[in-house]
Length: 480
Image (cartoon, rainbow, N blue to C red; front, side, top):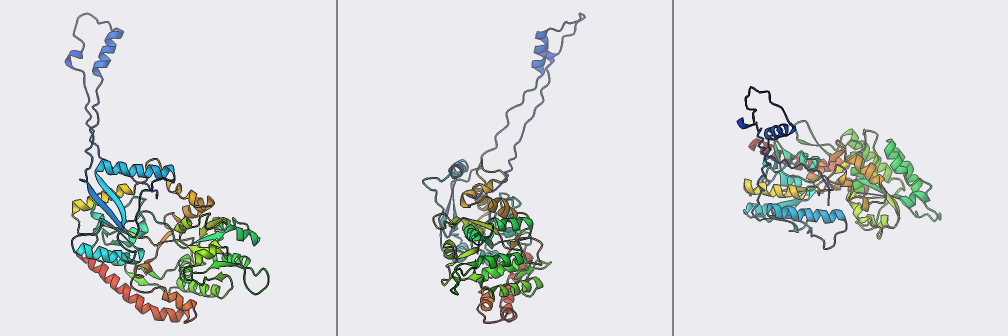
């Protein structure tokens, strides 16, 4: 369970009545001077004490037994045996809110990850949405946003879009004018580096070195190259490297380098339009550095297109570039060596480290009535509320500790990457569902073309998609 902080504002009407002593409680006029006794003082004090009525209870919101389905590409089922007290408390909380507010909620698989946008479209246009909420993959959120088929969440009272539990980069991406079309709980950064501590030690390096470099601000492209050289070995001098520094996924690596240098492939101008940024100084500097790195012997690429993590498990490469969520797959059963995790090293044109968030979007179809949409939002807001007892500001760390081999990955790396201003949106992912954006880097990596030739060959294709997206956004703003 992801842990996030929420405040549910409940307006309670407090009837405060100030009681005054009655006429009978006043002293009776007498020519004699009255003598105050303990009994009379007590009586007077008691009689003049105001009574505060009990606070009236606000009627519990009744969703009328509404069945709410979150359509995704995988089921989320309640486990028969809970793995922790937190998991036990989470499901107890979920059952409590469903009973209290009279609704049911379930995440169900309704299609593959690349089919849900089409299912959303066809079922919504038919007036019978296949689910009350849909999870749309990051590659298709731009098309979903501009489809005209999503409910404007900014019009719903049941969502507080400023709540820190929501991913602000995702909300920014899904905003058109005054309208917001999706939410996502605080995401998990991509393009982080996992490293094998045993291979560091065997290379004469402190296994905590990368943490120390990151903490001091010295984890840069230059120190990365120095570390890579020391991690690459041909131990028996047979001309074949026994271990190499970096397990290479060329498109992911190039993208990380670009973002880590303050560049990007697609940017936004001051008017909010998407603009091509392939030829910015920061982007070109990063791509040239990447090409130089590929000319070394520091990286190794698996023969199978998806074999990168298996090489990391086996200790064939000391560093693996991936998404932070992949910590869930680096279990002791699959990887016996201890490992850590740091940000990608920063380039010379960057001020600090970066985290790229490519979040999926959680949307409500526009065909629901205002009342229905409010109820769906109310239920989802409750469902994503941090479990009582696990809702302090640092509660999100609790579920991560069992997944990591050390605390520094959580206390230093992830904490730093979650800070405001560190997260970056990958706007190129908005058009990745329509064109093969990876071709830009693949052609360079395989030596088919130079950097400039690849950009020249791709920028017209990319610009055409950006033009469509900008036109759709302008039309949506005009219609508001």
